[in-house]
Structure formats: C-alpha cells, structure tokens
Image (tube, rainbow, N blue to C red; front, side):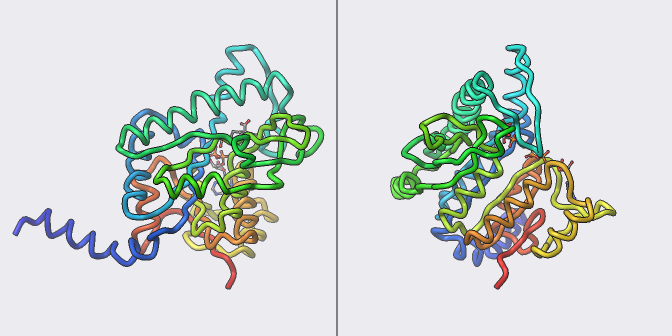
Length: 283
Ligand SMILES: Nc1ncnc2c1ncn2[C@@H]1O[C@H](COP(=O)(O)OP(=O)(O)O)[C@@H](O)[C@H]1O
Ligand SMILES: CC(=O)N[C@@H](CCC(=O)OP(=O)(O)O)C(=O)O
C-alpha cells in the first residue's frame, strides 16, 4: 500500500475527533497586518479558512492592517502616533483608515477566500449595526471601544454558507465613524457570538516567558502576573487583555499563534498539540 496514503489516512483518523468537536463551532480569527506578509501567505490562510468551512466550522475573520494604514498615511504625508498600542485618530486619519481597511485590505482577504473556492463577504462594524461603539480615551480622538455588538448579520451569513470578513471600524453614538483596534474588535465579536475559539494570529509563536520559551497553556492568573512583571509587554498587552476579556464574555478559549506558520489555524484546531499559547475559560 502507498506509504503517502497510509500517512494521510493516519492523519485524518487522528483529526476525526477534532473535526467532530468543531462541527458547527464558531471560530473567530483575527488576522493582523503583520501576518498578511505576502500574497502567498494570504493564499495559504484563505485555503485553511475554506477547509475549515468545508468541515463544518463557522469561521469569522476580523482583520487589522496597521502597516498598510501607515504606508498610506506616509504617502499622504499625514503623521500619526500611538498611545498604549492604539492609533491617535483625527478626521483625516479615520478617512484613510476606512479607505485602507474596508477597501484594500478587506477586499484582498475576501478575494483570496473566494479564489480558494469559498464564499466570503466583506463588511465593517458599521454594517447592519454590527459594532456600535463608545469613544475610547478622549486623547485618542476618533477611536472606539465596542459597546453593542449585533451579531444578527453574522448568523444570517453562516446560514447562507458565507464567511464574514470584518474590518474593525464602528459607528459612534452620534453616527460618527470610529477606528477600532483589530484585536479589540475580534474579542468583542467573539464574546458576542460566545465563540468556541478566538484565534489571534500574530508574528510570534505565542506568549513567551522571560527565557523566550513559548508557554503553550496559560492561565488567567499567569497572564496577569506576567503583565505586572513586564514579561508581557508592548503589543502583547492589548492582545492578552483581549483574550481575558473575551473569556470573561463567554468565549471558551483564546489562542495567540503565529499567523506566518504554515497551516497555523488547522494545526491549532485539529491536532492534539495545537499551536501557540492557549488561555482557557476557568471552569
Ligand atoms: N511575552 C511576550 N511574548 C511574545 N511576544 C511579546 C511578549 N511581550 C511583548 N511581545 C511583543 O508583542 C508583539 C505582538 O504584538 P503586535 O506587534 O501588536 O502584533 P500584531 O501586529 O500582530 O497585532 C510581538 O512581536 C513581540 O514583540
Ligand atoms: C485604534 C487602532 O489602533 N486601530 C488600528 C486598526 C488596525 C489594526 O488593529 O491593525 P493590526 O491588527 O495590523 O495592528 C490602527 O489604526 O492601526
């Protein structure tokens, strides 16, 4: 018998319990700007998402695009600053953010999924009142934190076998357009859907301790201790905080993993060893 076939059969039978576990599960995937490093990386990601849908998972993509926004702001000679990982956003900046995220980046992902045989539809938090936001810290300007997430449009898309791809913009209480951090948006959508998994794809293999060892299983307490001790720093602070908030909001588990690694999402969902660092809800 062909050895490749035996290996494939063994892989599939090992994956079977996971395929059953995730049948009809909701998995929210945050695709960060750094994880979208090339057309090839996007194609690989899209193939995994389509496969997930084919085996019965309901994937929801929430994306970032910080580096692409920076590039366009540079071209337009608009300067921007970050405070605690969030972009200080004025009217000119939010117009660029919306143009880049809802336009270029969102359609890049939608097209990649459709090219792989899936059916994806792009929207932002402004569509169908998906994300109504309160204003974040006043010094950030037009930045929102999701206050009311209406998932009705998402469940309709699941029923129609369509994969939602969400750009992180929201509507403010006065109807204004607000810029939302991609991790924050993904966590809010995952909590509103009571998702089975929140996967945050980034550019490191997971959460690392002081010796740079990836911690594959983390408790809420460990995250709090490591943040207090400065081991979790920079962009990893809002990411892990998003995980804790999502778990408190009803998500079963959150995982921080390397979006550049081949088949990262599939390995996380369908193998024993998983990928990256998982933080589970306390039982
Ligand atoms: N304890 C830690 N473990 C892993 N990465 C960490 C840690 N503390 C800080 N980081 C930094 O957090 C970064 C990920 O956050 P960020 O750059 O905001 O990601 P993204 O752009 O994908 O949203 C990593 O590249 C790393 O430099
Ligand atoms: C308020 C805020 O900071 N919004 C982000 C939205 C994009 C994002 O989060 O992109 P990444 O996931 O690639 O970092 C920004 O303007 O850059």
